[in-house]
Image (cartoon, rainbow, N blue to C red; front, side):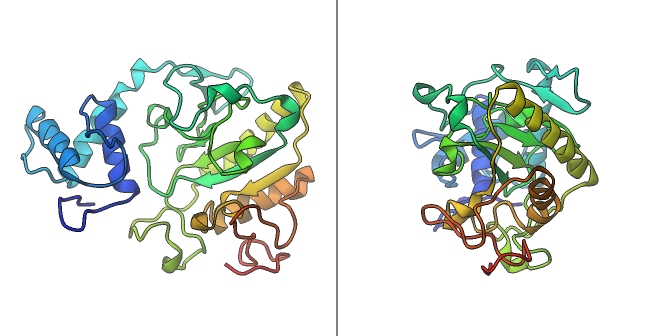
Length: 287
């Protein structure tokens, strides 16, 4: 990855990831904040960071600068209290140990239990540092790390704008990684990033534990789990979210085992896209 100042400016999730990391470390990226545009304010923040850590001061985020950013950020994890759930091997909680995410709306929180009826699956679309600290500003409720840890970031009762209209009824779950929309088809990449990941065996195992945790949560709260959605069903720009691999290996088994519903063949909401046949052979839609 190489981020440099140019015209037109570089834009995308990698830039936002750098901006968020700089902000967390105390280097302001300007009045527009973490907008995903690699402009002069972000360059100035990078240069300040480089000067402080004896790196070449050029305002460019190449291998050494990014490695230093990630190393410093991740080593701060000890400052964040991770509470292990004693009833589960790989589930930890950081609820209340961080600022609310950008799209958290306290006025609508907590959501009444009768309103929470489903779960929406997401992929991050970029490889995040695989620590709980890195996900503390997550615009969703739960993160599945590549290591197999499941992080309960925000209370499932909280309202967070994570998937358009699904945000009102669903718990948002993010899987860490940039996965292709269709397995092996590079044209279905999230944003043209040449680096891609696949689900790790640990993530698949963690998903099983998360499924059981969610079942217990719905039962304990006397709520009814009815739906399992893909983010693409609510937003056309999220065509690859969460991707064929997550839907086929995780969503379909959950649907079959628990009797959940994705809305049925061709079903969407808003400007969303239906589950494609490539993800689910019973579907009639195409990618």
